[in-house]
Image (cartoon, rainbow, N blue to C red; front, side):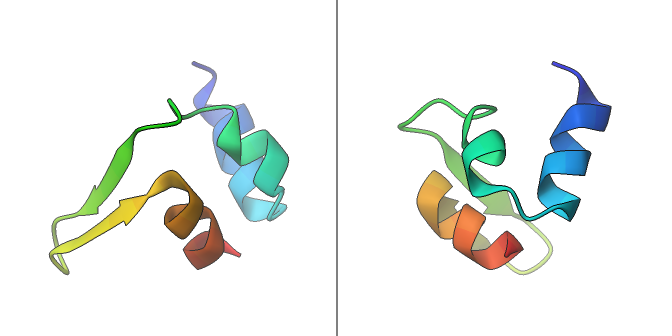
Length: 47
């Protein structure tokens, strides 16, 4: 994984490019806030 390309996609708010970095059934955990997101929820949060 190219972390630079991932963060560039996030910073550009490019949902399609961001989605490519996750398995469709993945979960994203934000441990500092105890939140648990699906990939689609995470993409909505990042935009």
